[in-house]
Length: 478
Image (cartoon, rainbow, N blue to C red; front, side, top):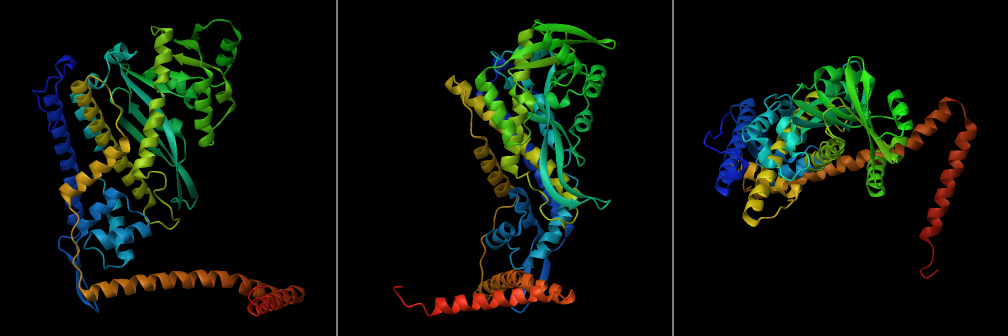
């Protein structure tokens, strides 16, 4: 693996501040090399600077400036225009020109699998370095690669190749529990997160922790032959109904040729309130969330009751991960307009970029926290959003620092005139739209010979005119 120092000692007992600094430095070099290649590919889109001629003379812009907009996620027109005005030489072009070049960038596939480079780098350092030895499942981390899987829904508005409107899609992601890094993800435009999770390759050395949405018998049968799993069962399953009736806290049943271990997980009221609040916010609440007892199933018969409880508690990490990504990388609304060009490419590009940035910043967060715990003999939990903000600034300042825009009076006047024209066009469209309601109603009445409606409209206009006249001549003080 590139940038990995073979001399780094991966034993937890010998991990020192100097080693962490070395690891952090190599992480920075690896991430900069990834984004530097991406920046160069943007430049290659137009090998020479594009020059356009206007009344105020020749204006030159550089496609490399779009790198900053992509990293900062300036996708909507208002934010994009503001960024163009303040942070680049790409400022006096038409907005449509900028969007055209951004569309070219969205089709770029160079960032699609780079999130896995960061994951591989972390695995070369030994994932146990990121764990506290007092963790209840620390021993299990030594035996297995433990993952957590879940899906998150993102809103959109476009039509697919068949002409069908798509209002949302699902991203099925798999999180590595020891490092909190994304191991794999799949985008499902049919919102079938069950098939999304099965596209990830697992082995018998892995454990995947899943929520009740993945407890379909077909999925359980699939995982029985592929890997180890811990899943919460839904109430509509026969094996759930049969087990919940007896007084046993755990039981072993046969599923074909394979054994399944079932346990009852009694949750307290505080945890139950948290779960209900979370799913009510996402409009995913069901009767299952009101239960005080969960049924957990696994094909690892050797796991103890406490092991299964502690494993399932760790499932919440994927919820935190999805929240981090949606809050910090604007993954909620990538495609807002129904006429957006190349929506599939745009979604794939920004999703890949989001997971890449997440893996980099999360690994950096883990390293900083580890360094602090060694220096001060206590643990801290850093604010993740601050890490993301600082990293984005570091990335832009290193690869494409913002330029100081020096404008002549002619260019300033031209820009203010252009902005004023854009505002006037927008206001005219709004006025026409409001006025068109009455014109349209008038025409509809005439075309259908509805004189009764026309009389109502005329009476309405007369009434409004009288009200305006009265308001105009009302004495002051009345």
